[in-house]
Image (cartoon, rainbow over all chains, first blue to last red; front, side, top):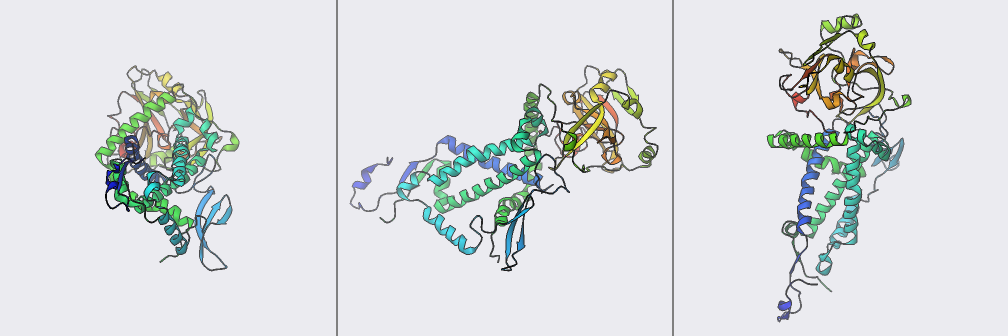
Length: 223
Length: 258
């Protein structure tokens, strides 16, 4: 299992296990990772630039200024507490969505912060990605990115002439645009969490492993 | 300091945080020469790939009357300036002529009535603005292919240029007149028509009266309004500022690849 030489352990100080370097990321993973960084950055820039020309989202095939937009995200004052709450309007229904993601107040943030900090693995657990991380990567690669590509193609009059089934898949050109925008936000959220985790786990070690492939396993602290 | 980080805040963090940071640098990045080179390469790739996808010349989806959007937003010019156009509107385009010339064996000069007497095609299609909005309208007109066959293109023709009556940018040398161009692949497509009717009515002034181009597999700005002259050319270099259209001369891609 361990790639390092066990010779050092034979020394006098047997108590603290030694710092160990493992080869964690194959060259394919590293190269595609940085291609992804470049692509996501450029596509997000061009996408947001275009979105700003008409920042409203609709459902169906047509949508323009004057047509009620299906998704709008705003805020209102809660009459009971007098505090501002987040309100998401979907197809005429208003939902108070403050706290839906569990990070509406500083105390929640503190919990989250502790939680994430506690989860940073040491020792044996640092050798692999945990189940949550794997699920997140699986969702991005096999769900979010394909939806992104297909909904993007559905916005093209040329591609939909060749593959009209895309309209039926997403429920129309404007529906595809709405989905494209929401999934783009999910990808940004994923990247934010990803970068926060890299910083928590050690940014130097993380960057080294994604550039050279080598990752340092720090010894397990405590029992 | 704000005590709230709402869902809205998070979503904003998604777009705005990245956005404000990135957007400020966007214009610079996308206008740098190396980026323009990359974008030109991207344009070439999209053109080739999409032409492969469209090699069977499929039609863009056509919709039912019930799908027509209640309104149809305006873009570009909605009332061309100048006394000449005003006179045309007043006279219901009686003196207006469509010219077909350039590299053709039989140059044409057609009145609106003569164009309406040609075989007509009616289609209900989706208009796709590059800004992101879409609208559905019904268009009636003559297929461009019909006019091109009437005028007998010479073998070296590669592009069809549409010259328009509206001046979208006022300049002393009149270089701000709207124009657009298509290659023969799109020019001869069945849904590429010169429309004089919209939603069962004569084409309104705001939508390009008396005649506008509909290219249903392309983005909005290719659909030139107020068309007055169709020119067959071998190269786009000598038309306008040489990029093939009003917006193309100002940085847009000739083939948007969308």
